[in-house]
Image 1 (spheres, helix red, strand yellow):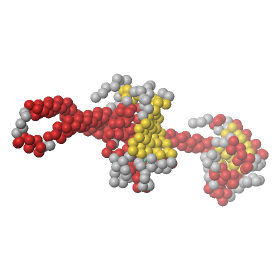
Image 2 (tube, helix red, strand yellow):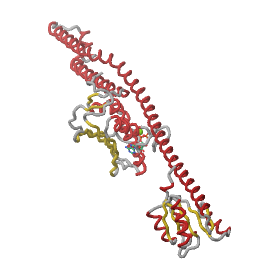
Image 3 (tube, protein in one colour):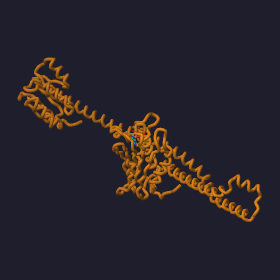
Amino acid sequence: MPTSESDIILIVDDTPTNLAVLSEALTSANYQVAVALDGETALEQVGYKPPNLILLDVMMPGIDGFETCRQLKANPETAQIPIIFMTALSDTVDKVKGLSLGAVDYITKPFQQEEVLARVNVHLELYHLNHNLDRQVKERTAELSEALDSLQKAQVQLVQNEKMSSLGQLVAGVAHEINNPVNFIHGNLSHAKEYIADLLELLRLYQEKTPTVNPDVEAFAEEIDFEFLKEDLPKLLKSMEVGAGRIQGIIKSLKTFSRANETQFESINIHEGIESTLLILSNRIKAKSFRRDIQVKKIYGELPLIDCSSGQLNQVFTNILSNAIDALDESASRQPQDWIPRIDIRTAIEGDQVAITIANNGGTMSPEVQDHLFEPFFTTKPRGKGTGMGLSISHQIITEKHGGQLHCRVEGDRVEFVIEIPIQQTIAPTPHQAKSQS
Ligand SMILES: Nc1ncnc2c1ncn2[C@@H]1O[C@H](COP(=O)(O)OP(=O)(O)O)[C@@H](O)[C@H]1O
Ligand SMILES: [Mg+2]
């Protein structure tokens, strides 16, 4: 409970004797007293030194007490100050008018000192109680909304982690299953190439050492176009080898991607992460009935290995790239005939940070959307398509887990997301580990 010494009471009255009597009574009760002789002065005074309570005369030259009260109540800065009217009239109409204007009480002249003090005390106490209650409610509300916010964030993280982790498990499983058969296809191809070369050589020797060819053999050789077969077979084997090699590359990317649920920090090649994410999304990048192939332009800078969690970073790439594809898909119907959907990916070192910029053309984003972009559950997409979690989780991963920044820039029809993370972590949550290539 605040002490009464700290309370300032403003007395507004045009009769100096009234001022003197009240001042004395209140000062001796340990209140600080300020006085004003008319409504205008009172309003001015309240402006630069707000009192805790006002004793206000009704009849005054210039603006009267009612008008002064109305103006005080109309100003949010002063509306809370309790006002007690002082009136010589015991007329009920005046009392009712005063109370209806927002005054808390009235006292009638001539004053009963004890009564004035008692009423002032009661109203100051009420005022302080109210004030404290107000503050407590505000504090509680802030605490609650903070709790709600972090609850939402945690929920988003959980759902996204669950999603990425099951996708990661699926991808890892598929990669593992394909890996073995592809390896033996690729491994055996080099033997097959040798054997076939030997067989062809054997045939060549037969032809050379056998001057008369059996007509049946000759007919069959013609039927199967042996000359062409001899030439084509090695080429065919070569392209099988290239194909198998390509599948091995894809498997490697799938494995990189599938570490999405790992949160450990390692030294990572950022470009590998981007490539594996593009691979996962390659089907969405291809031409659709309503738009052409998306042109993905990559301008990769010379980057060192970066301290980060590759799994989490791949989540961020996936979220931003799929948003870009969504935006291109969505805008396709509004674009001119010769429009080419594009995604530009650029990486560069900027000081002690690495900057990864992912931009798409054809976009639109209203300032309202830009304001809420990173909020959990904010989405402009239809139900079932958008969850509004992608950017919120990405923001969390970049800022909280990697001590970096994620922001969005819109320029004309270009929407650009910039990820900045320190090359070396000082806030790594887990001890550094050498890169383990699974
Ligand atoms: N490249 C972009 N172009 C236009 N709008 C975008 C882009 N990326 C994100 N947005 C906007 O941000 C919103 C939130 O994105 P996100 O958090 O990933 O949730 P979701 O994709 O599920 O809607 C999207 O609904 C969209 O309105
Ligand atoms: Mg999204």
